[in-house]
Image (cartoon, rainbow, N blue to C red; front, side):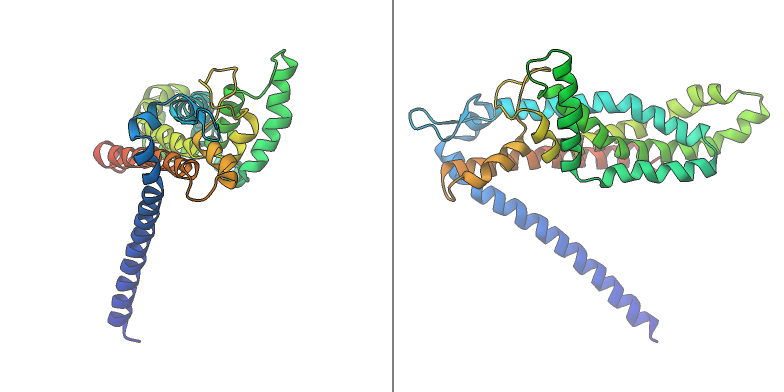
Amino acid sequence: MDWKKLDKFFEYFTRGITFFSFFILSFIIIFIVKESLPLFKEIGVIDFIFGKRWYPSSYSNPAMGIFNIILATIYISVLSIVIAFPIGLGCSIFLSCILEEKTKNILKPYIDILAGIPSVIYGFLGLIIVVKFFEILGRPSGESVLSGGVVLSIMVLPFMIDVCQETMTKLRKKYENSSKSLGISKWYMISELIVPASKKAMVVSIILGLGRALGETMAVMMVIGNAPIFPKLFGKAQTISSLIALEMGMAEVGSVHYSGLFASGLCLMIMILLINFLVEFIKNRYLGDEV
């Protein structure tokens, strides 16, 4: 077997796959921008982004502004991170520094399974548990921004735990023997050495979780109420992804409404791309081999 030819073939194959992936991404971006242009010509970018009324089917006074929807998307995503981060940090410390290796190897796959559960299952559980819980507490409707944030927080947990736990495990192996030889307790090592040294990994986990939360559709759509109004913690709201999922099927192809949904998707895609670029920037600029 000619290993040099095989190496060359593998090199060209991987390059081809890389360029093909880049081509697909470029094609998606170009297609979404192309379908969004009619709306921008009709309404304008500023009026579309900062408009506060979304009534595309109104005969008397149609309006297409997604400012409230953008705010709701960001609000729910940030709220889910605020709820999930303390839990994720505690789980990461527990898995990396407290549990024995055998027990950790048993429990860790169950956390990873959370990332593979279909989002519609999370939405269904949120509908019958979280929404009903807030209704029992006396809220007129359990469908709210808070319900969406609670459901999303569970969904982003595996991503946050993975990043933090991996970094903390490396740091524990690095400091554990030295700490024992100096007579330092385990909890002092965790609080004064491992947690402070993991701050950058925590930042990356937060950004990754935020990127995951921004694009979630089904689970949020089932518990948020889907009203394109200004988002309040105990009030209904609507995210960009749920807007597209609900209205794309009834929008006439080629209409301004149809173009507006593509423009909404373009806004969401830009937000997620910015999150991904921020992750890569932080990892390359500040983290190095830490995560």
